[in-house]
Length: 330
Image 1 (cartoon, helix red, strand yellow):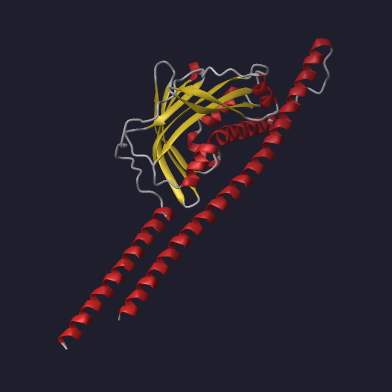
Image 2 (image 1 turned 135 degrees about the horizontal axis):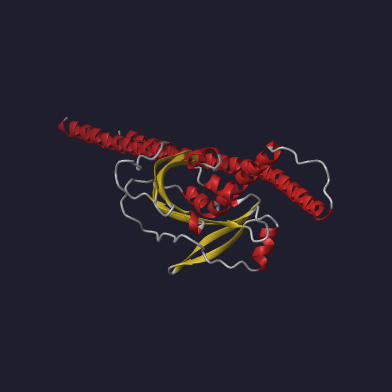
């Protein structure tokens, strides 16, 4: 009798241990799922970042990129040109894009941080929390940003340095606040187009360091598409702004000029027609980019659901196996 009691006691302890393992597995599964589905709680407006900068920041001003014949041909086709610039011992990607809009319009879009959610892909919310204007005309612009990819949302705090005299905007993280990015630096450099003063030539580069917990597909989006996506939305929004201005402006005097004035009028009409066509093309490109972006986000959501399903299936299978072991022991 005593031996049977001891045997039943051992079986009870074994079954409890198996159930404890199963419960631990389910708890781990819930933790993984919640980390994927819920917004990260790492960011904080009140707490400082873990460091004061790991990635070397950009210097304001001309990046010193020479555009060869191939680059110019690419830009003439209204396409972005990508190249590498040297940064210390390594290189960084840089994108150059011609925009059929004045530099003032382009800067107006880039500096409109409070409206990024309506212009920039995958941006959920943005707002400036401090703006400082220096005596030399430069500005420090501190911006809170939140972006989203499928089930993942990331919040980060950016310190922009806008130097109009150098035609540039550089940025780093605001290290006095905790961001969901490990580090991020970048720059914009905008100059008038060398062949058309009513257009702009845009230079953009960014370097981002992410934490290990950020999903791989987010890293792919941030690295492979960041350059062209950034110059793409600036081009689209700037050219659409020009289109709106053209459509709402008063029609010119219908009377035809004579001599040289007639030639100037003709050139202006041609330029206006090119601007109108560019704006229409930009609208079509915006629609195509939106469809492609929605398709990428749809695939990312499907991938996340599959991952979550596999994790849950594995947990359930482990639970059934442990129950089977417990049952066979009894």
